[in-house]
Image (cartoon, rainbow over all chains, first blue to last red; front, side):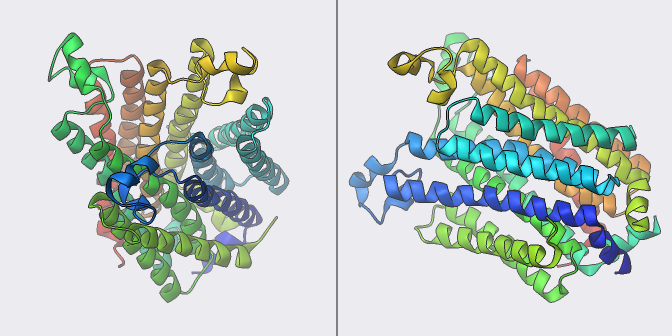
Length: 155
Length: 155
Length: 155
C-alpha cells in the first residue's frame, strides 16, 4: 500500500493523471454531442432509436446519415486514433522518470492541441487550423515515444 | 521487483485488473461475432476475403454492407468509445487509493452495464434498454474522473 | 520517487514499454498513410480540406469515398480494435510478475503479427495471410488475459 501511495505522490504521475482525465473527458463529450445532433436532426442508425418519433414504415425515413452527425463522428474517431497512443506512450513515459517541466510541456501542448482540433473540426474553421493542431498533438506523442525508447529500450 | 509485486498485491489494483480484463475480453468477442456474421451472411469488405466463395467478377456481389453486420460493428465502436476512458481513468483512479468497496462498486456497475448494453444492442431490445445501460457506464466513468481530479489535481 | 524508478527498472516493464511504443508508433503511421492516400487520390471527407484544390461547387467532386483510402482506414480500425486490449491486458499482465522470457515471447509475437497484418492488409496479400496474423495477435492477447485472471482474480 505504501508503494502505491508513493506512485501517485509523484508529481509527473499526478500531472499525467490530470491531463489524461481532461482529454478523456473531452473525448467522452463527443458521444453526447453526437447524441444531441442525432436528436436535433432526427438522424438515427438503429430502428429502435426512432420508435419515439414514428412507428413502422414511417420510422425508416429517420434511418439515414447526415453530414452534421458524421462530422462529429469523424472528430470522435480522430480523437480515438490519437488519444490511445497518448495514453499508452504517455503513461509509460511518465513512469520512465522525465523532468517535471518537460513532461508538463508535453501534456499541456497535447491537451491544448486536441481541444483546438475539436473546435476547428466542429466549427468548422478553414484549414490549416485543424491540420496544424493535429500535427502538434501527433508530434508531442512521437517526442514522448522517442524519449521513452531512448531511455528504456529492451528488445 | 519487490515494489512491483506490492503494486499488484493491492486489492483495488487486483480488482481493476480482473474487471478490465473481463470487459476487454467481451470487447474482443465482438470481432469474432463480426467475423461470424460476415461468413454467415456472405458480406465482405475486401475482395481477397471472398476468394473462397467466388472468383473474379462473380465475387463482387459479396462486397456489400449488411445491417446485421453493421449493427455488430456499431456496438463494437460504442465499446471502443466507452472502454478507452474506463481503462485510462480507471487505472489512474485505482492508483489514487480509493476505498476498496467504492472502487468495486464502480467496476462492477461499469462491467455489468456494458455487458447489458451489448445484449440490448445485438438482440435488439427496445429503447431505453440500450440508452440506460449506456448512461450507467458513462456516469460511472465520470464519477471516477471526478474522484481522481479532486484528489490528484495538478495542472 | 525511488519506487517509481524501480517500477521501470523491472525488465518485463521495460520490455512492455518498448513493444507497446513500437506497435503504437506503427498504428500512428496509419494516420499518415491515410493522409497521403487522400492527397494522392484527391479524396476528402470534409469540404474545408479540398479548398486548396478547388473552390465552391467544384470542390464537391473531391468529397467521396475511395477504396484505396477505405482499405487503410479498415486496417487502422482493426489496429485500434486489437491494440487497445493488448495495451490494457498487457500492462496489467506485466505488473503481475510473469517470467521475462514468457512475457517477451508474448510481446514479440503480438508486435510481429500486427506488423505482418498491416502488410497483408495494405498490399493486399491473398488470404489466409491477413486472417492468420490476426488470429496470432488475438491469441496472444487471450493468453495474457488467461494468465492474468488465473493469478490475480478478484471479483
